[in-house]
Image (tube, rainbow, N blue to C red):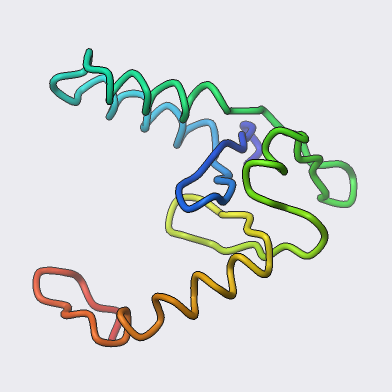
Length: 119
């Protein structure tokens, strides 16, 4: 993260944290999508890139999350940080617990056909 990082709106009302290199990769991937000039593509780009805020951790590693992103993700007091492949996610702890409770059984039963397994 020495080259900088951003936080932005993520899916399921969480906040995504990304390195600047990952932002560049996402930008290139979105530009390569076809058709790129549709209402859906414009909306996705605006919501994704338009909500980005460059952050710099303080000396103790803490970051300040802007009010607009805290409101979007419903962050109040307790949060959960989840590492997800090339990003981290910041969730309201209650929302995270509800998300896991709702989808844990489906994940346990998920077929791994065509997907790399971790076993």
